[in-house]
Every structure is written in C-alpha cells, then in structure tokens.
Image 1 (cartoon, rainbow over the protein chains, first blue to last red):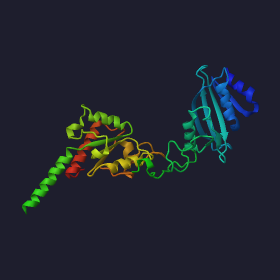
Image 2 (spheres, chains in turn green, cyan; image 1 turned 90 degrees about the vertical axis):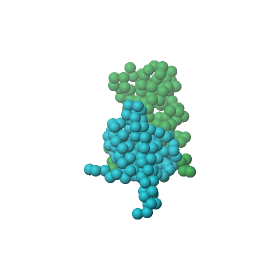
Image 3 (tube, rainbow over the protein chains, first blue to last red; image 1 turned 30 degrees about the vertical axis):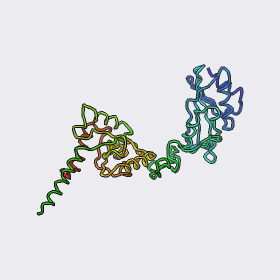
Image 4 (cartoon, helix red, strand yellow; image 1 turned 180 degrees about the horizontal axis):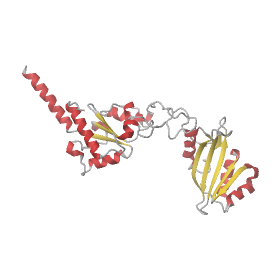
Length: 162
Length: 152
C-alpha cells in the first residue's frame, strides 16, 4: 500500500527525488523548492488527509554534498497512515521554506532545527533559538561541533534584571 | 579576662546554636533529586528532626539553598539571581551528581557543577542520593555552622 507515494509521484513527477517504502514506512525525498506544495497536497487531498504534523527534525550528514536534511513526519488521523518527507540542503545555503503557514505546530520544531543545526526556515514568523540561549555560539548538534566545547555563562535575561 | 569578653563569646555560640537548628531551606529542584527531597521532608525521614523543615519557596525568606538536579547554562543566571536574592548569612547544599559536577551530562548544555556560578558549602554525591545522605549533609552543615572541623 503505497498510496501516498504514488499520488506524490503522479502529481509532482521529477520533483520527487527518491522514494522508499518498507513495512508500511513510506519515505519521499523532495526538492526543497517544492516542500510547501508537497505538504499542502498531502494535507488537503481527499483520501490522503495528512492533517497532523507529528515531527520535524534536522539531521547532519557531513560526508554528503547536501549536508543537512530536514525530515517531516506526517500522520493522518482519518486514514491512520504515516508518511515521511525529507528535504536536503547544502551547508553553504541551508535554507528551507517554512511550513508554519500549513501547520502552526511546525513553529517550534523549525526553531529547534535552526537552534541545533543552523538550518534557516524561510518565512518563519519568529526564527530564533529555542533551547539554547541567544548568545550561544555555533550549532551543537552539528557533527563538527567540538565535544568538549562549553559556552560561557550567559548574561541574565532582561526579564530577571531588576 | 574581662567580663564583657566572656559574654560576647557566649552570645556568639548561642547565635551559632540557634542558626544551626533553624535552617530555612529553599528548594531549587530541577530533576529527580527534588523527588528524593520530598521524601526527606516527609514523615519517614523527617528533616524537621534537624530543625530544617520550614521549606520556603521564596529566596527572601530562606537561608539554605538546596540545589537539587541538573542546571543548564540557560538556567545558570536564574540560579545565580536566586542566590543573590537570599539574605546573609546563607548556605548552599549541592545535592546529587548533576548539581555537583554535571553528572553524566558532560555536554554543551549543562553547567559542570554549580560551583561555577555560586559558592557551595556541602556536596552530596549520588544519582540521586539516598534521603539519609541529605540528612547527613544537613548535619555536616550544622557542624560547619558551629565551627567544628571534620575529622578524616
């Protein structure tokens, strides 16, 4: 049963770079320019109805020419199916269109991917660090972040200054 | 020896004795050590046997800061601020491996021991420590307040 992947291939053709399906896990790698369209299609098409964005994560593959990956996990509450969408971006220009216009839930997930990997999300309403503090230098989940590097104690937030 | 000297010394000792058995702890609980602390203040282990049962949730009313759990860099200025808000004299117990040394969180986000930020009087090892260990830490702090040096 590869309904979602087949529908994607029919609709987007060459923009779907790779697909993979194993034991009900369906994965598609898509062009980053098409990501918003692809996800809107998955959400709004009758019979697919992936109306729940479960997860959005970054990943770092230093050996690849397109080093970073953004992974979207979608779930359909009506058909009870899952699909995984991946987008790859190079280190020189790690920018992916934001899907916050489609799912409000994506807001904090995209901030997390930005915080940990430095992947920027074009069109995000409030793209700033979410887990570490604003003065934090570097992106700690990148594979080349030094294991022993420690940040300086941050200056207090203006809210707790008297 | 003059009479006044003797009286001064004795008042000093009385003040120490009074402080020793009226510690007002403020819990700064960020992880599982704080759960152990709940056991320590409850009837089974009962920290009130040592006069430190009056837990305050405002640093302004407390003189013993109990840091229990992992403190990360984002929290560090907050912990420092809370310590600064406490009135003198004040003491700090660092409870558990995380607060004392970062514990197994040897990574980019966790402060490698709260003594990077604030002074600590007694360190309690363990992950988490047994309630008896925290009671022992309170007793050690009382000895320190009385000016008794620990024998090794």
